[in-house]
Picture 1 (spheres, one colour):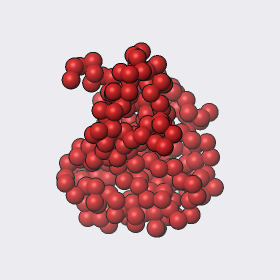
Picture 2: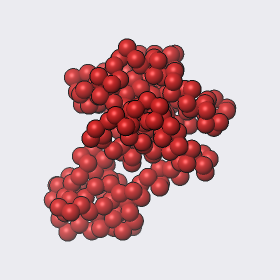
Picture 3: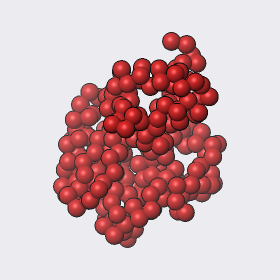
Picture 4: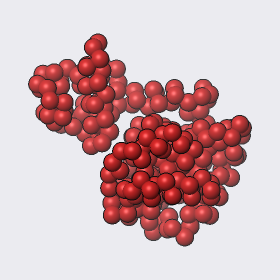
Length: 243
């Protein structure tokens, strides 16, 4: 496969990550190629489980990406422990729990459990979410200064009126996250939705991933962020893997 083909395949995945679903025509327009070329790219990605074709003909990201994301982690039992932790956190808080890892300025969610009190929850597994607008992204970036520096050199798109779009403001935010030990997204990625994240630290002190809870603002109001973060830290420590 040529380098150009690889670049096009990656851009196809990025389009699906941004939009959720897309068809052959939209991908062809994005890549500047004929529809037949776009169709071949999607078919190749589908053959490896990296994308899936939906009933209407459009494509979405496939579960094969979750397998690859899980392989990035340091220890082989990461995925199992992360899922068990999400299950426990969702049961304890009633909120949707996620574990995410860093991917060059973005947070990739590798485990999720929907809380019992959450209706029509968004499914985040395999989703590459913006680092500057999500609690997991902020937490991971606060522990990855080089990735944070690269992100500040790019445009920071606004997803809601509350999204941080200034590089200077993001710098201050990440410093605050590092100092207090938890991060929050207060309707910054999705309106009427809040989230809190804490680091999942290995014994050496490195943040391997981030644990996040997400819910509607009325279920996770800003005044509860600190208390929620403290509880998440307790539940993470109970796994015996993180602290």
